Length: 269
Figure 1 (tube, rainbow, N blue to C red):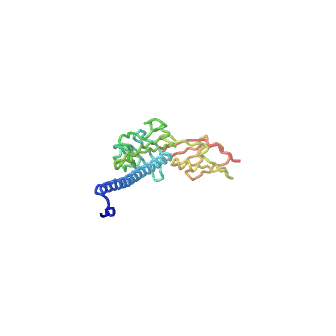
Figure 2: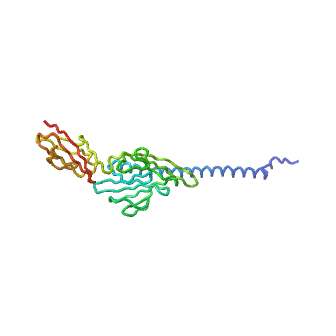
Figure 3: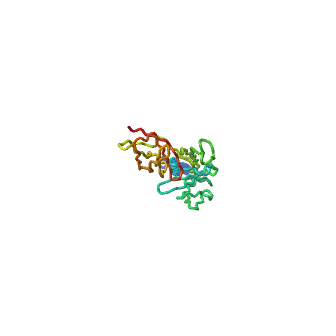
């Protein structure tokens, strides 16, 4: 009688079971790789969206802090102007169609078209994708969704970003705020902003350089309290006043034509 144990192997049923299990394991491995790749792509989209939006927010905050004049203050539409050495630049940030738009003009002209339309000297572009339901992005002085431009002292920016794609949903929220150093029709200069350097002839008066740059200074005139002119200066250009004059009136004018007057007491022995 022959020994059949050496001829034993997998039966057809066993082979089918093993193959089925192998396919299931392979499918699970491939699914894991696919999920990992999808998550990585989603994370990359979200990071890119955050970086771009954060860069735009930082730029807006810097501009608002650097002597911006608020010209329109609505929950979905912010317009401000910045005076630069090369001239005035007008910036519009607005929300429409689930997107944050930025429009820029090198003139003082106010934008009149729809959000993101460009034209009229404005160059427009999309800087962030927002959920379709987004209708506002700006608040004023802590809570108001709209305000009189001349009264605005701080601007809050809140962006709910949408980085969805590939069947996945992803969102994040970025917030920033900026204190406006000046608004339309206001220009504040304090006595300590005027510096006096005593010398043998009297004193040299000059406007603090940081203040001058922040105000986009056009000029400063000095006079006695009785109205006698002592000279005209500018950023970095001091004015010599004679000995014996202790009370000085400084009138500062910025590039937009707004003026402010302050009185300085000069004490030189």
